[in-house]
Length: 445
Ligand SMILES: [Zn+2]
Image 1 (cartoon, rainbow, N blue to C red):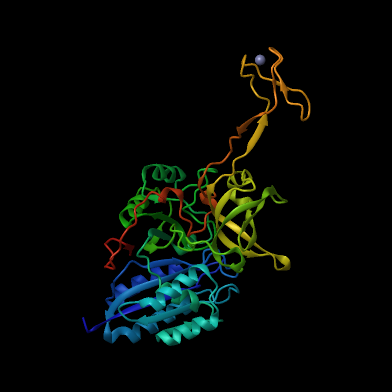
Image 2 (image 1 turned 90 degrees about the horizontal axis):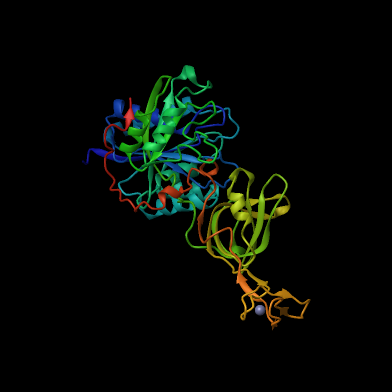
């Protein structure tokens, strides 16, 4: 295979709130790579979500990596063609995007790239560091407007989805339909959701809201998330869709895996704004509901105290959080937000109640002689049985039942990040993936 080159193509931030979509461009590139360059895909196209807690990125913070083997003689022509496609399809006017495409040649992405990906999942990578890393690795990078898109490109190239991963089939609309209402049968989505156990986050159970279709002007018709390519394709084919589907592509992805949430808690004193973190400690203050319906409480560990928030869109999750009491031992996961005045708060994405504090209540004792409930004789004066006259000094102490139990709790699916691991995936055994050619059919056309 000396006449072929293993090429990794990273794409970031070609979308905008108004129009484009990085995965749409990726699916166009897939077609070009296969038809014009005889490319052999060595993995599914990878849809990589990065740290969702960076305020200047779009909420999805998604990048794409394509891993292909291409004939040695075609590499330069291929790069030129793909760069042209980025320039043609990216929304260069949108203020919030900084499109970028990166190429790296090599068989094994190695530890440097892997660490870069891990960091981009949880932290804010300074641009200077990304530029240095790119030079050091010998990447060819094309950025537009600013260099910011380089971070996502490099992280996508470094993505290693060998521990946990899912798939998403994303289908796209024909151009005449962009911006119009998406036409598909809602009932067929509910039926698919009930029938297809290997899929997740199709419908929000609390509101009945359909979650597979976006609402914006982007070219995405709908996306189905699931455990394996065959399942998402079968689920897609079971839907009744009432408009033309221009194309679809199955992506392998880190969505639904909690990849951004560390399992080892950080010291509260060490957390930084915009990081995705886990902290562990005791609830130090009664949860309180503030204006806007948000629920706020605090957690303390040996190094400090951090305010935690369950925001209004998390729905019933706030009621659960409200029933925590000072002394409860919890692990809280989420993103660090920076508030006015430099204060930080943890936007909770998941909470594990490790141990509940016992709440004890003193009640008048039951008479041991005749079984009657005694009455208090007044403050500090003990209890007297009205029936037989026995006097008892001490009250009975009973354990109060709590409205919450130890366990892991998440907001409802409609409030999830793309990366949030849904509860239905907690019972799934770890999968193994050996990099290999994707199994047909994984794209159309
Ligand atoms: Zn009695």
